[in-house]
Image (tube, rainbow, N blue to C red; front, side, top):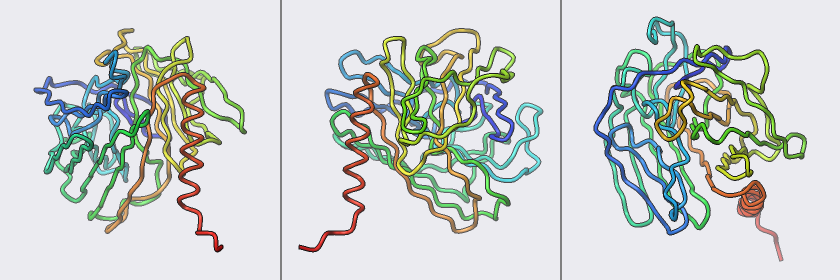
Length: 303
C-alpha cells in the first residue's frame, strides 16, 4: 500500500501521520495462529502471530499500514500533505488519521466479517460509491482472507497497478524471498531512508513464479503471503527512525499486484492466504494449497 504510500509508477513512499484513535481490536485464535482487526480503523488486519508467543508480526504505524484493500484511480485534485494525489479509497482511513466507516461487523468463534465504507487517503472524504468487505477464517496453519469490492462511481481512466492487498510487516523481518524462474531467491528490497527517498538499488517491482512471497528474519522464519493468480508484486523496506515492532516507523512492505481500471459497476473478489514458519514450511504449505486449489478448479473427470 502506500503508507508510506506509493504511486506505483514512481515508487516514492511518504509516511502518513497518526491521529491516535481509540483502538478496538477483535481476534480469531485457533491455538496455532492469532489474527486481529482494528474496528476503529476500517476493521483492517493489524495483528498476525503465533498463538503461543502472541508476538505481532505486522506493522500498524498509521491508518495506511495494515493488511487491507486500497485502490487507485485518476488524478482528482486532491493532495497528500501538499503533494498531488489521485482517487484513492482505502480501508483504514486517511493520512490525517480519520478512520473509514465500518457499516457491518460480525464475529463468531471461527469467522470475522466486516463491511466498510472506505475513506480517501488524501482528502479524507468518505467514498460511499465503493463498498469493501472482508471475511477471515483460520484453517490450521493458514489464515484465509476473502476480500470483496464493489465500485459504483465514475470510470477512473487508465488501468493502474492495484494492491492485492497491501501488506505491512514488522520491520525486524528484513529478508525478502520470492521464486524467480522456479528458484527461491533472496533479494534486497528497495530501501527507503528517513527522508523517504528510494535508493537507486534494490528490488522495487518483481514477479514470483510461485505466486507467493515471504518476509523472514535471519533464521529464515517469518510470514508468507500468497494471493492465488497474482504473480507480480511491488516491495520496499522503510527505515523510518529505526524503530521496528508493530507500531514502529520502520516496516517491511509488499503487495501482490494486478493491473486494472476502476469502472462503474465493477465487482472484484479475491483471496489471500497468510502463514507463519520457516522458509521450507511456508513453501510446503503454499505448494500443497496451490495443488488443492488447482484440483478444485479442474473440470471433473469422467469415469
